[in-house]
Image (cartoon, rainbow, N blue to C red; front, top):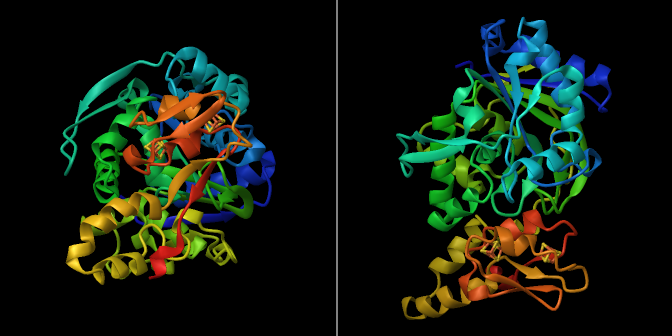
Length: 392
Ligand code: SF4
Ligand code: SF4
């Protein structure tokens, strides 16, 4: 595997800017040289939920188009290219057709003559992971012989940030994702599960959409933020490490990067700008990137929080453990905004949300703080609440 990160400027989603940057990334990496007329290619965008491209939640359709054309320029046949993903909710043909349509990805696939996968078939796949021995994955993931991951640069209320590695969670069908949250409520083990998934799927490369990213309470509830870059790499954890540098966010607060570091998948001395190829001068930290509110002031993954816990006398530990579910960042329903659609209840892995009289209600005692409800709410009615006891 080539351990470089390609970076190219692209200040707008025009076909010219996307083509220049994506082609630059393809030319700078080794993996695209393996693409040929018989290569079965899977393109894995970031879909998440039903959002239009200007919301900056999903991979932009012009990035998809530029990647398809870069593959075709290298000899790939459009009929051998498939785009597939599964969002957080139900995984069925009608749901996927609607998602592909709203995100603008279906139109690009039709125009470029490639398949937008809606059959929604899945297969079991053995995994030789640290915490997982078997995954159920979308069938095209297992049928492809060249996988191009197409993530987006975003903040994330549960994991701090999301880019290449976390985007592979969409290879797991729909509501099955909730089962993994239930199985690994602890973030450390959830991080190892994602690294097991990365090692099972073995994507060949990623092309990351950072023309407009999302800061704040992403992956769906934040605000779009112009970054003006397209980046590519064959090394997913390294690409994510580079994104942390852009966000000026401590990668050891990201559960899956902590897991990757523990497993020797990240450079021991942290991010080294020498890995950048293409237009490294364009790689400038984004000023005042807004981190998720769950991570602010000693929140998730913070050493302040760990330190303050370690200073608490042992006899108070059970009380603190009980109180933590109220103190630690957790979702709360903004009743004024809630439209009672029930999507949060559908996705909740602990089935701890009910909708009564048109408003959602969370039973906090059972909540594992996975923030899936926050991700899936179509009207940003799930707020993140945190008491400032972290700085005690
Ligand atoms: S909180 Fe959001 S997802 Fe849940 S019922 Fe209300 S509007 Fe729907
Ligand atoms: S209420 Fe929200 S954060 Fe809590 S377990 Fe359910 S989906 Fe996860």
